[in-house]
Structure formats: structure tokens, C-alpha cells
Image 1 (cartoon, rainbow, N blue to C red):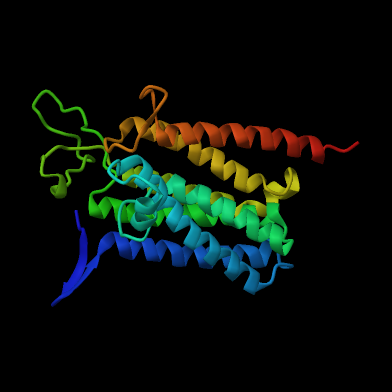
Image 2 (cartoon, rainbow, N blue to C red):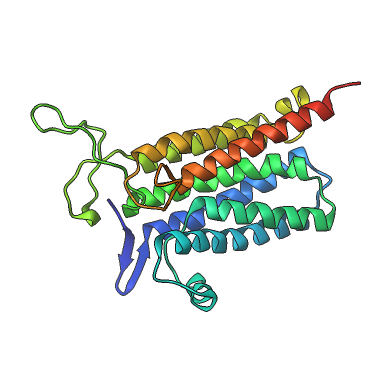
Length: 264
């Protein structure tokens, strides 16, 4: 693909890093605009604080989960802490969980409206993921399994081959598939926050965004070919297990919120 976006003399700009930063910037802009519209009572400084804390904690959470899953040679608290500050692979769910917990602490500490900000944060996070996965595609990371060939040994025209793998195997473009669904969820649920809150309860847009992504991610894992850990005797990938946990938590949350919102 295009692991190096461009180079100028000794200056080399990697594609993934550019899209990672671009995703963060777009997420911040989206979060700011959504918060102005749907929770104007929250000061802009609080939104900035919330974003920065979630961004930093999300980064270290993504690194931590990758270290635990993909770097078995890193053992002990001291080695793990050292590895956290080194550039390396990151896992979205690790970052998402850490960002959620950090955001919850900030919101509670500042007494901010959790459900309203949750509605704004989930689409913003999914937008960042969409751009990040485009960077993964250009870099050849998080690649898919080999596609079935026809009787003449030809792959479908939509299949992709990653030069960095040096195996000449045509694969499923899972990064682009995930980027598409994440972008679709970000736009759809971001634009429907007001109507969903009016029809149901605050937090609905965020919950439905999570549910949609978690379902798709569980299914998409069957087509990925890069190892990211396994659970229950290798029946599930780590991401599939986390997806199931997210769906269960969302189901319980919806039941509780729906009961509380029911009149009488």
C-alpha cells in the first residue's frame, strides 16, 4: 500500500501516524460541535479537558492491551511501564475502554451531564477509528484473511495484497470495511442525537452506536488474520470477547434506562 505518505530528504512521514493524528483532530472538532448543539451547558474548557484526558488515557490503554496480547516477552510491572512509553502496536478496544473510564471520572468530578456527553463522545470516537483504520490499510496492518480464488486462480477485483507482508496473498480489505462502518455510525448517530433522545432517552445515540459497532466488529473478526489474543480456548478473539461484553452491558443499560424513563 503506502506506508510512507511522503518523504523529503531525511524527513519521513508515515501514513499511519498522519491518519492517527488526523483522526484525533477530527474527533475533537466533531465532539466540540456536537457538545455545543446538544449540551450547551458544558463549558468549552471542560470539553477540551475531557478530550485531552480521554486522548492520553486512550493512547496508553491501547498500548497496554497490545502489550498484554501481542508482546509476551514483556513481563513484570517495570517492563510493562517501560513498554508503554515506546512506540508500538495499539488495540482500539484497549484505548476505548481506557478513554471511557477516564472520561467517566472527569465527568463525575466536574458534575457534567454524562448521558449527553456520552452521545457526543461515541460518534466522535468512531470517527477517529474510521480515519485510523484507513491509516492501518495504507500501512498494511490489521490485515484480513486470504480470499477464495476462482477456478483460474484469480482473486476478486476488490481483494488487496499488502507488499509489506511479502506473501503475495490476496486478502479481505477488512480495514476499509471497518472504516466504512465506523464512519457510517459516526455520521448517522451523530446527526440523530436529538431525535433519538426525544424518542427514547439521553444516551440512546451513544448506546446504539456502540451496539452497531460491536456487532459488526464481532463478525469482522472472522475475516482478520493478524493475531490479537484469544479467549475461551481460542474460540473467540480478544476483540470478540470484548464485543460480547459491550453488548451485554449495553443491553442491561438500555433496560434500566428504559424502565427509568417509563412514565408512572
